Length: 286
Image (cartoon, rainbow, N blue to C red; front, top):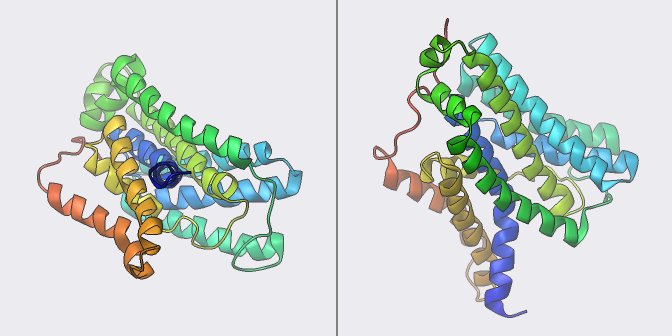
């Protein structure tokens, strides 16, 4: 494989989980829920997928379980934010700690070893390629749903003016709850890609800040599915670049920090110019 082709392939590999998580962030924030828990949803999806694949010997069972785990965390966030009015940043941070810490504890309880799980049945190269294609397809599908369907209009209205949604006879809390649950499932699918697509195991710290990079992609992409996907692809390309440049003797520590530095630079560059949905992170009180 030529070096440009290798770079492109690696960029798609690194971007896939970011795309899933960024799309989850777009959907949640368009509905008015600030999803800080993307990091935890990635970790939960990755760990539960490996645990289920180990228990059943079937990678597809692991995929389904990982998506479900992400959906459950998304639902918990949505329920806490809509039914109890919990501060969304606090709830998301708590879920991150719960998911990442729970996965570390689960490694010891389920696999009898800390740090990393044994190898399990993976999706293999065809499955990984299919998930990359699915990530790109989801970006276009979410664009169509948000901008060309009645439900998408309601989601966007919940993120801008939930009282207007309520005045139309709809329940903005239920719409927000469904959006965060679906968003969690998308992030969980990103976690499945990390553990069963790119690799065949779960290790502590596997999410490696990708949830927060995905949040940066959401902002950089102006809260749109296609924009966030483009930003995620750019961050994935930077991650791939570190592997290419390491061959030329550039310090690995600098290269590993490159995607995170780029995310900070991107956020600093658009600070004050990008406008989030007006009711993003604002609890709806009847």
